[in-house]
Length: 248
Image (cartoon, rainbow, N blue to C red; front, side):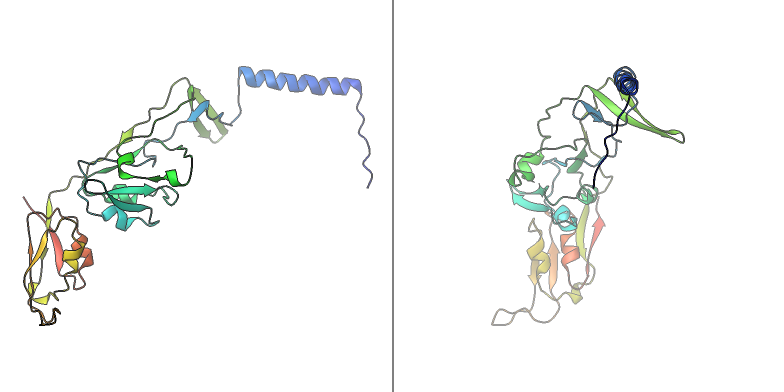
């Protein structure tokens, strides 16, 4: 296949060059492009942006609820003076179920969304790293916001920097404690005792054979003041006879 050479007159070539120069000058003075020049420009995101997750160690009660509710299995509890959550950002889908389900507000969202890691291993953030925002290296000099109308869309550029902050919404919940609805229906399986991270559940009476096996019913659970109302025992109970109630 032979491609014929397109020939233009010198006047046409001059017009094309002049048009390109005019467009470049126009974009330099009054830009109308919709491309964000990142990182010199930073897009302004809404207040409910789901970004990097921050941990408040003093509020965490080690209830493991965040690890259990995570649909991507991105949260692993690690021992750091107590059991605290760490996040694997190679798995995290930023659904923030962990933040919304936290009963004490120990987990909070931030407006930091563009994170950089040196390796995949560094993306596994440990609890002590979650207690503060990572160091921010910023090159942006202005913020950009999309303005969408029926006539079209354009970018609004403002000479201001977006504030990178932590948004913490504290739940309005009264203290809760687990209790047994039907002690006579308890199997004595002790799963509630094994799953309790605070050793708040003890077994006062139970029928045990000489071989050490738990048989029959009539076991009596005692839930002590160590209970923080995390609800792990309620979800673990095979008989569904445990529940949570508010306490003064």
